[in-house]
Image (cartoon, rainbow, N blue to C red; front, side, top):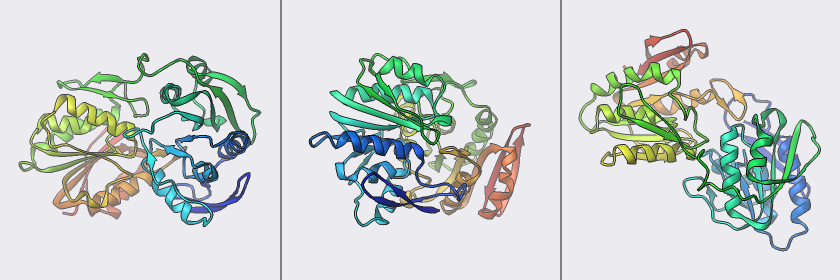
Length: 380
């Protein structure tokens, strides 16, 4: 965890960046600084503005604008804990009572919306259309990000959804765009949901734009699925199974297709992933004992599982490595029932067969191709 002091237009904030990865990375970047400077300047001219912040990373925007009592919505389940932790480091600021997600989005109208621009062009397109639905007629959108992380076709995506009033000068490799409300909306946009059919199955799997591999089955999961079927076939009746980092839920859906009696749980850090998995299950297995958790890992009250299925992400906020997988391995080991197993697929170069043994002593390779490996780990 890295802790440093960020200067804001009206104060200084001590901020920590939780989690693993590069220890030199701070809890904010130049895009946060630009957004805060522009937001303070414009909000100071408004009387009691209603402010919304979208996809803050670690609380820099939320706490840096706390004088304006912003509402906050984020796709990631990591934000509430990060904001609460950083608010605790600063006696002059308070964390918002609620951090909304796309499972329970806030209701407009807002005078000013501050948006961290995501890397995915389709998620950006979705966000801008959603903003059009909550932004006041004379409202203002401030959208910013690091230039190297802005999505391809970003200019086109903005032009199709909102009115770009100004592109502010870049500073420290960051940029902020000032926009007003457009007419594009989500109801008439065909890009909200995309889906594919799973080969050798009756399943059709759909997903919202923030979800990984929403248009076709990724090659790692393709290698994984036959071993998922084998593993769930051997479980006792009504066994508890977790699809961890579930994405669109395709792994858990295949498990349910094989064994409809399973008590199947789905968990992901992305609220759009959880919403997607929930929609897929409700359409295709309406009688299942499924539960859905928007969480960074496995909740403390989740209990124990007979089988945990995992395709761990290896990038988080621009940081690439095995730090996310290690967190998930640790959580999985703590939540395996006696005799239970963790089944994973991962990139071969990340060496998960070694890191898994830090948490579970027995690790067995089930399959591999030049890029991916399937492993089973247990306490046995």
